Length: 436
Image (cartoon, rainbow, N blue to C red):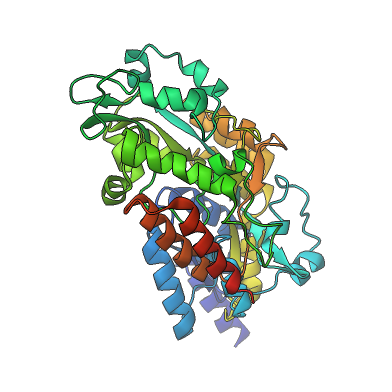
């Protein structure tokens, strides 16, 4: 019998079939630019763990969350998911995510190797729902040819100021870069805001409760704060500092013609409008640098956000990998999550130059890889390493309801021209009512 077993074992090895059971771990992600990097991680992981196979599935942002919610409801969710700070509190509240804290302690996984704050935002009341994988900030992305035609030195963009009263030098810049059908810019007498050929600034058409790319950096640089800290039960959307900021944006869209109208940006998308050369500047998340390089058929550059009355500010966000509590292979799933959070994996991801990994060495590799493509992303990294420039993505319960309330409020402002202060006051009352 032993002889027969040895023959069968040898035969299976010669045939390339493992002589042991292989566990498949399903892993979902939404970013279409990242599967190659994560497949490289999976290849490295499988060499070290030949009894585990990683199956990666990528789905677009909106479809991803719809499919994931359906999978949670039906008990068919993937073992590991790419998770977002706006989503995980609700998942954790509904006991859908595995607490990784005991595993981190058991395996003595270091948690002090990431950019500041990225570990703690994925924890609540001693439980840990993810380890950091990457981070992002916001910067200005500009069309080099449009700046050159206007006689603007790109280096001057990193010294811009902004305020909600007259827009500062940033407001003047987007006016200068706005061109109507008659060739007049926004600083010229007779500029036609109803017939704009080139906008100075492109922002997204649907504002949400956090405004990561569209408005948060301006509002916080004006002195606004969302709340008193993670898991706070009171928000400040009624702050006049926020109303001033949104009013400035709304006026730029609806009256002055310097910012692309929300209805147009919603239809096409801010990135597509910028790639289509409908505007000179846009606010861009670092995760979209690769997309822009691939889709903009012209030279682009990146600059620091403008300095507001309270300084230069950018939202600092970071993704993590979470484990579904219903996974039948939690130990194998944890091995995969632990590997993705390791320096080895984050250096692999960084070498692809698509996102900025949570470990500094990985970020440097990503920065170098992007530089080889002709992209200087130091605006993003300089902001991230400035302790006074960053604020964390808001983490809260009732995130879905808060999003619904604020989206409706911003729609009424940007599409219908409703009173900004009154609309935000009403929205804030509704938000805080969720916690009563």
